[in-house]
Image (tube, rainbow, N blue to C red; front, side):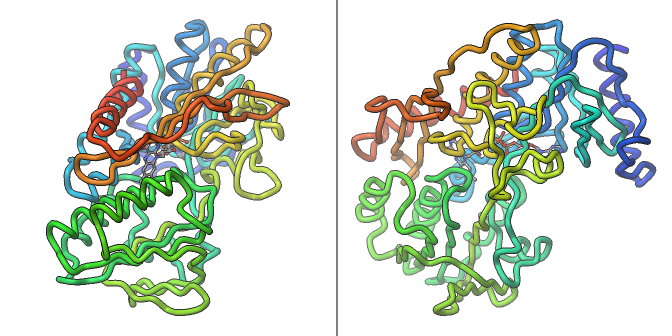
Length: 425
Ligand SMILES: Cc1cc2nc3c(=O)[nH]c(=O)nc-3n(C[C@H](O)[C@H](O)[C@H](O)COP(=O)(O)OP(=O)(O)OC[C@H]3O[C@@H](n4cnc5c(N)ncnc54)[C@H](O)[C@@H]3O)c2cc1C
């Protein structure tokens, strides 16, 4: 079957599932979707980690078949989504498709939801059937620990008070609510305890919302309820930016963890007081994407996946590798750049494992840019290595940018262009 025909075939199955003609079949009875001819790696999740892992496995060894399973036809980037909230980036510029990646590297893309994984039989189940694998790479990103916030309804609450911590509709909803904020109104933003996806992300978002309000709604203010003892990343630079550009607009309260929410009243409760906002942006605490829980690769903490730092193979289940936000990667932050770097290391050593070769020692890099106004940005960068079985930051290999600057924003623009291009071609 040609690539095109195979894609349409899978597309048809997906459509049938959407019409309710095929449910989520039990693992044993699920019909094989693409019969396995040779060695195959299945990658679940076509985001910052998965798309790159799929590509690099094929680049390292084209004799290995790669099937990438992704629930969405296009991918919307969280990096730069705060600029969409701020009103100076179009969400279409954050969106990529998979056609070129698939065609350029001979990757089979299956657009479907992974509903179950049988790691003993080495099978992944999607609504259209099952797929066998020799090795599995999971890069499902995050899901939320809604149950830790009293009153949070996973369906209704985000429609009233968006988290916008997965980009797309939620980002646009938050943007609309910010534009519609009553004159002189109050925004409440709540930040969960670390670790969470993108340590500087909440503080960049505060800056972007403040930028919008300063220019379109003077008198409006932002109350920040941070569960952490202080700003988690680039603290001194964010404070400097808020002092310089948004004086008197941001009421930052550390050690304030939201325990209860009322979506209809637009209020949150931190155990001491109930705080109402005209707009509430509640970012819930997080855990590895649900599919990792289904695969049995989540560690004792019930949140994240322990992995071998050289191959990213799960320490709990053989043959399953976990990269990106879902894994525990020592000192590396949960960022798109980290996921990209982990994907390349994982692909290299996974192929070496499949070919009976020795594993190579990795070197990782991470840079995280954050916008603080429409023109100025700040950054943090580090190199990471494996030492004593752990991924650690190389001393003096990086640090934060010296100041807020327009130059950093130019670097940031190049970064997003390059990384989205790399993921989609
Ligand atoms: C507001 C914000 C700003 C950020 N800014 C930056 C930044 O400037 N720089 C940076 O480096 N990082 C940034 N990040 C962090 C970055 O988005 C994540 O670290 C990165 O996306 C992690 O990659 P991943 O592959 O683990 O997950 P993702 O990129 O989220 O990819 C996961 C994919 O898996 C798919 N999936 C999940 N489960 C299933 C299933 N069962 N079946 C099929 N498909 C499935 C999802 O649809 C998704 O496409 C930011 C995050 C946020 C929220």
